[in-house]
Amino acid sequence: MIKTNALTKQFDEHIAVDSLDLDIADGELFGFLGPNGAGKTTTVRMLTSLIAPTSGTAVVGGFKLGEDDQNIRRNVGILTETPGMYDRLSAHRNLSIYAELYEVEQVERQVEKYLKMLGLWERRDDPVGTFSKGMRQKLAIARSMLHEPKTLFLDEPTSGLDPEAAKLVRDFIEDLKEAGRTIFLCTHNLDEADRLCDRIAVFNGKLRVVDTPTSLRHSLFGNQVVVQLAASAEFYTSNLTSLPFVKECVADGNRLLLQMDDPAANNPELIRVLVSANAPIQFVSEQTHSLEDIYLELVNDK
Amino acid sequence: MNKIKVVVLKEWAEVFRNKLVLFSVAFLPLVLLALPFIMVIIMNNVPLEEATVDDIPEALLGTMCGGMSEADCALVYMLNLFTIMLMILPVMIPVTIAAYSIVGEKTSRTLEPLLATPITTSELLTAKAVAAVLPAVVATFLSFVIYSIGLRFMVNETIYNAALGPIWWFAIIVVAPLLSLFSVCLAIIVSSRVTDPRVAEQMSGIVILPIILIIVGQSLGIILIEARFLFLVAVITAVADAILLYFAVQLFQRERILTQWK
Ligand SMILES: Nc1ncnc2c1ncn2[C@@H]1O[C@H](COP(=O)(O)OP(=O)(O)O)[C@@H](O)[C@H]1O
Ligand SMILES: [Mg+2]
Image (cartoon, rainbow over all chains, first blue to last red; front, side):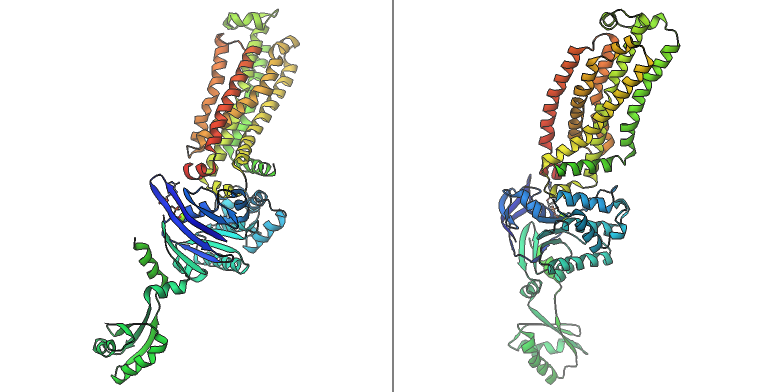
């Protein structure tokens, strides 16, 4: 469980995080979406008690920020923006150091478990300096899991990875969610947030909106129906604008773009009208907006 | 305690893989030991010229060489300078280790995940200091033991006793660790501001200046290294340690390290 109340961080003149209110449930995979410089890393650093908020309060995993910091550090896992590994030491050594620092009881067992889970067991004795970017990132994820934290902060886990490594990391995040962990996922990758997250917060210094990916789409753009014709669509708009359920109708070449409240209920009537006007219908489809449109809309609307 | 141990061992595993660090910890003691031995061999085999004895400042002659021949006195005087030079070790070794370890953590961005663990900043600072001071103290002590064993076989008892009196053991056991602490604190403070370990090492390297000044002072006869002087050095170093430690602790706060150590 993560709950923040007017959480604010100011650097000199610049307010990086402005009065953030969040309420994240146990077991939720929460997407924290924002462009570079939005203050995502700053938020994560505050919530993992690495830096102190200028004002506001937060409770992380049942512990109050500023009062129980040591317990917060003990009970959360963090994947930092940069993996930060000891390049001269082996993967195994890197993890055992952290297992000790996290007060893990069975160091060897945990290290082995996560090295194997992330496919790094074969390379355990190689210096991390010889690892690819994807391997380092996987190792850093393993490191954040050693003490089996209930709450996990992942700061842009797939940024800079090739598609294959990114997919592996995303699958791993899904497994973590299945296991019931609460995950705070910072990303500027919309597709990733859309596919993985239960809820998404769009954030750029201020919180813009929090909702599920699906209702985010609907609330912003309503439902749009596209009718593809074999002829110019212009001729048919007048037939449709008079229909009560059509809120808006525009022609775009051979396509009709319609804004409707409930396409599932109204499409049969719509099609009947078009057919009786001899419209040469090729396809009827629902236009779904990508999250990207929504995101750009929100982020650019200052 | 366990966390301190883990970090200290980690520091050594990382830093001793660096050739420059190994050089300062292993090679420097060898050089500082070889020089006096070579000198003794030369002086035992080559007749001493009057000039060398004349070079010894008047003030030193009386205290240092009661009842010794002039040649012996010259030897004691030279050995004294070499013993002081051994004190470069407790200063240079911690500077090198601390500079490489702190700047290394900064540039490879390993501090953030480290600080996210339940290690306290004082545990971390202690670990950094111990990791730098311990090898220095051990290297200094071993060098001094080898030095004194070597001299025992190479010079006669009168010279040995005059050259390596109890004040030198005080210097090695008390003053050397104090100097190490001083240099590690300075290295931490300097390293927090720079991004190149070599720069940190050079800037912190100014701590050997006082030692060089003492060597020069002694050879010019301005300073006489005897019990009272060493005791004074110990007290001054201890006070300086306390002051520098205060600043190092101030600099070594989670948020500072993360947001200001660039
Ligand atoms: N230590 C700091 N001092 C001053 N400004 C900072 C500091 N850390 C971050 N910022 C500023 O705060 C803003 C948010 O940064 P950050 O949290 O890293 O964003 P994100 O992770 O979303 O890319 C940026 O404008 C950045 O320049
Ligand atoms: Mg960031």
